[in-house]
Image 1 (tube, rainbow, N blue to C red):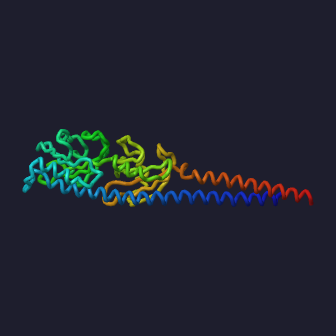
Image 2 (image 1 turned 90 degrees about the vertical axis):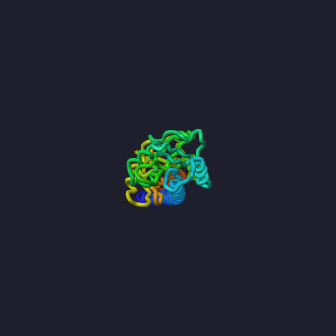
Length: 294
């Protein structure tokens, strides 16, 4: 009987070892996939943001009150529209300074004079002269009614002369993310460096707080990339890969719930357990029969 028990135990230990090894391999494969997708999206995001920033800097030179500028307002609006061509992620390009009554926009004229001085990108640029490029939190556009976020810079000159801003089409970026199929229970998000979600592949609700991503960003620290286990309200326990967007205050998050990742592995594990039970049961029966015969 001891021999029977020892043989069965060895078979079960071997099966358990193989199952745990397969589990670790499945999670590692998912992490590599997430890392690769996050890397590609971070590089794509850097190119898109760099193109937007170049347009911002060109648009800032169109300030009609700047020394040496002779563009009439109507011409500036047309030039702004021309600068946006070929950049599908942009919805609006504008110059804004309420002190000078300046609001020139690529948007239609009947919506081009809204007060934007309460927006964070305007306040931040006004209060911080050396801010440089600023990425706002997402909000609902007063021009289109759609979710957007704005990249902004101060207009050049002495003192504060207003801002140049570019409104990003969140829907366009979301559509790009939705074309990537990681399976059920997955997530792709573009985060601001404080954890606020700028674009979510699945969630269309604007979240003013980045609290759920703060633990992940703290684990990322000063690194360019990292992967980790994280508890998320929408996924539960999940494997997440983070990668910084080179040169910009943004991070790409890609991941999937562990439950979904391990779905195929669980099915295989149950089959292996059933097969092992049959094998050990037969061995036990045969060994017991041999013992009785002897």
